[in-house]
Image (cartoon, rainbow, N blue to C red; front, side, top):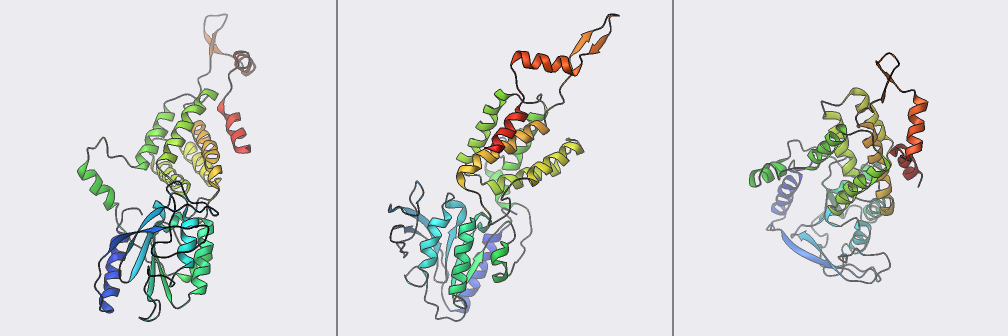
Amino acid sequence: MAGAGKRRQLHAALAAVASQRGLPFSIQTKSLAADMAAGAAGAQEAGATEEGAGPDGGEAGQFNYEASLVHIGLDIARMSMQDKHILRPVLAGLGKGSQVLAGDQGRGARILVLYHAHLLSSESVLLLQACLEQNEGDLSVWLTSELPVPQRIRDWFVELAVGGSDHSFEAYQRVVSETAAADWPQVFRALLDKWRSQPPPRLRDVKEVKAVIYEMLMRNLRWVEATHFLLDVILEHEEITEEQRRRGIAALAACDATGGGYTIPSYRIPILWESLFLKLRTIFAQPSQQASLPSTDGSATSAPPATRAGRARKSGKKSVGGAGAAVAAV
């Protein structure tokens, strides 16, 4: 899980490798520059622009990475969903520049580290597979991931489980107030609790759902991360009904690309999120209260369904159920 200490243990293993080779181990932060048009990569020739590099663009930008005498390390979470453009020249230039040592210390001497590898796109997984096939015996790739290695490249890796609580978040909580210390599961739980206190959604509620979605996008929350945060909240929430839990899990299970190494085009993400969140908004809403009409003997009776439906059509109000289906269809 996040914050369990994967990076710390990886650095300890790298220090052990450096000690075996008789080298000092000191991690430095460097920057990569990119020339995507030429596709070249070097110590100053691999990276992305601030706006995100395109496959045919020639803009040069900067991307920070870590390096030592035994490895280079790149963080997929900091690539702003442009990992396939950044990794292509890096993987193509391995061993051709000064950013990695020549493999003269034995098998797998050149070590490439990818942090948060569960955020790799499908295209990046293909690039990594090609790199492993072309550099067999000379390159060692280390990954940190919150999900299993994608099936396509799983045979190349040995998985080491790292258990424990979220130490990073615990450290964050010690330096900020409790009101400010909120992680994504807490945010999603608060959102579900808010929906549980509200009636079924109307068309006007779509704006609120969109505001939540674009807030997540601005904070660079990935689709695969959001679906797993939501799954944790739905499974652990003690106050929702079992029917709501079952329907919520079914809505998440129907989503595309919810595993590591499998992505969807960026332009589809807002559409898929709108569809998913509108479904969840409907699932966790309060049951609608039937309107009561006075009977001839003075007692209250429920209006027949046809009468209520007629009133809804007359007032011009629509539920979001149809809107969610329309969004999904788009």
